[in-house]
Image (tube, rainbow, N blue to C red; front, side, top):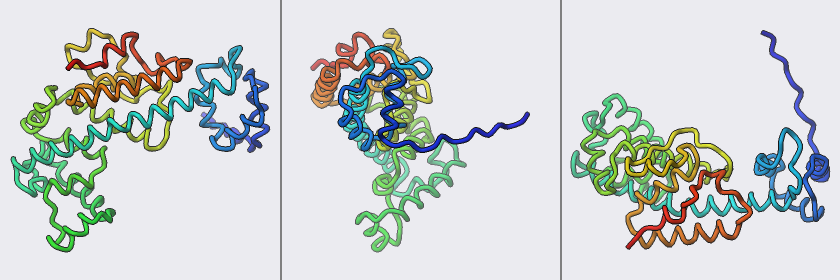
Length: 290
C-alpha cells in the first residue's frame, strides 16, 4: 500500500479566512468586528464551534459569524465555571486520601508496596512523586527538603501530585482504603474511580482551553444504580456534571453553582446544550434539596 502525501494548505490572511467563511455560507454582519475576533482566536479553533452548523463545507442558512462566536463564548464561560467544582473535588480527595493513608500506614506508608492493590505500581508512583517534588519550588517543599532531609509525609507529598496522578493513586489503593475514602461520599469506589478519571480529562481540557461543546469524552462515565433510570448519555459532558453532585456534599455550595450554571445557559439560550448531553430535566436533576 502506497502512502500518498498531501501537501499542507498555504497560510491565509485574516481577511482571506473571513472570505472562506463567507463563500461557504456564513453571514458576516460586521466585517471589521469579525476580523478582530479572528485576530484573537485562531481560525482553526474558532471554526470547531461551527461543526454542527454545516454539512461538508457548506454552512446551513442563517449561520452567522456572531452565532458561532457566541458558542465560543459559552464554552469559555462553561470551562471557567466547571473549574470551580473540579477544584473543590480535587482538594477534597487530596484531603481524604492522605488522611486514610496516614492513619492506616503511617506518614511514609506510600513507600511500601503493601499499601497498594498492585505492589508493582508502588515504584511507578514514587518515581512520579519524586519528579513532582524535584520540579516544585513551593515553600513547603523547600522546607521539607532542608529540615527533614527530603522526607515527605503523605499529607505533604499528596499536595505536589497532579490531579491525574491523584486519580491513579486512588485507583491503585487497596479496596479497603478505597472503601474508607468512598464512605465519606456515600458512593461505591468503582464509580468514584471512574469519575476521578473523567474529571482529570475535563480538567485538562479546561486548563488548556480545549473545546467542551459538541465533543465526546474518550471514555464511558459510570452511574450509580439509582441514576441509570435517567438514561443520560454516558460519553458527553453532562454525564459528569450530573455525577458531580454526589461529590459535593455541601448542598448550599452545590446549589449556588447550579444557579450560576443556569445563568450561563440562559444567557446563551441560542446554544443547543443537547450537544453536551444535557437532559431535558437537567435543572430538576441538579437541584439538591435541603
